[in-house]
Length: 290
Image (tube, rainbow, N blue to C red):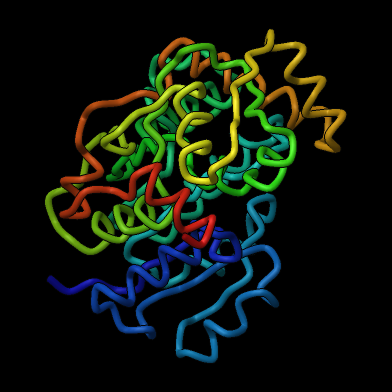
């Protein structure tokens, strides 16, 4: 199979950069990768390695057309908050991809986007619907929660002796960014994925109570789970310095977790990457340098 250039949006972010690296590992020549982002100063090193680097601001229609010129396949990594402009940004990317004549758009959605009740879930559902309406060949990568969402908080968790959330006993099928990136690279470089909807997550789900127990075991320090009402959790996040909208979105995500919206037992991630995904225990050990 011959693949013309592959565009990775959001290459300035963690998932995007990991996907670029995964494409290179899969044998895609650097010259056939177009790494895009709003502030490309942060990916100058990719240009130094022979990768085409182009500025792509999701709010800039003309700029998107220039960034996607000559592309064959495109990875649309969902925009971060603010949520209000998210779907409009995605639509501009999809329109630009259609105008560029790409043969496939892979979109990083969220687990069970078609039935999710969260604010974030709604933006993914609307984006998926727009992709269908535009008739562009696509594949939906419904990524679950990141393990890094928890491992990045380990210093605070260990300092406070508590995991704080509003997910109740809802099960979470989290996986590492690197594993989600590997899955994206697979669907961008192999045939047979067009039209697929993949529910992606780790093989081993956990509740936040189980997360606290796993942290206790890995760190040798007692950690408990403090389950709060959604509104109270949002206030805790706001008090910790998060922007108010982001605090509400994250608290709402925990509400969705409590409803099972971040759980999947599909096995899709394992099958796509050809190995078991990184487990919670492995991620904690790596983060704690054990």
